[in-house]
Image 1: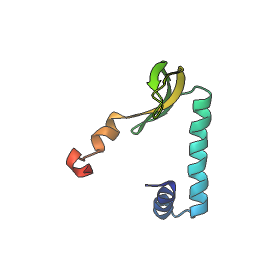
Image 2: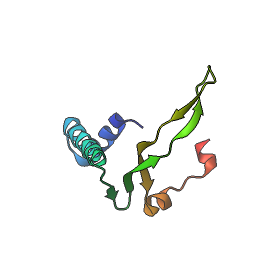
Image 3: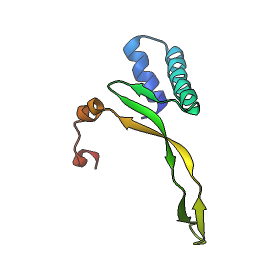
Length: 97
């Protein structure tokens, strides 16, 4: 599913125009980005939370040349789904094949 698909579904469900719906979705995405940039955590009850995680440095190999490199410590965004979201997913592994 793409952002355009989400815009169409939300637009049809709310009666807003696609332009208005896209503006709301883009605004939501920007708020999440800005909050993460400040180091804030975003909690959406019943859905999940966005936060930052520090990844430790690690050794890796460059494909093709097989040269070992060290990837530095870095900060990455993570999403943790809520218990309610996890429980609402009624799929089995076979459904995804």
